[in-house]
Image (tube, rainbow, N blue to C red; front, side, top):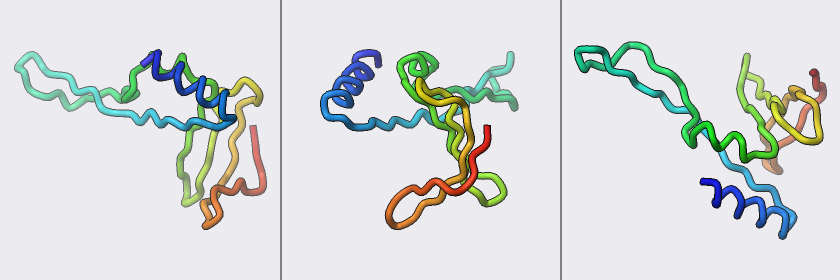
Length: 100
């Protein structure tokens, strides 16, 4: 995973492009003492926790009350902010208003 991340960073720098990788969450199921699946599960990053140390920026995309939001969670250039966005035929558009 580390060599993949390094290769992606080299390509991004060499060709002045952005690399987008999603790290969805998955459920970690636990077994009870009777070897049955426990009702409780924990969400964990699908690519593992170590992947989070190799990224430069982290964006959290979610919907709330039929609106799309992006939280810039980690960035070397920006503070943590939340912005609304929409998806149009010409791409992703940031909408008015951003709030820390």
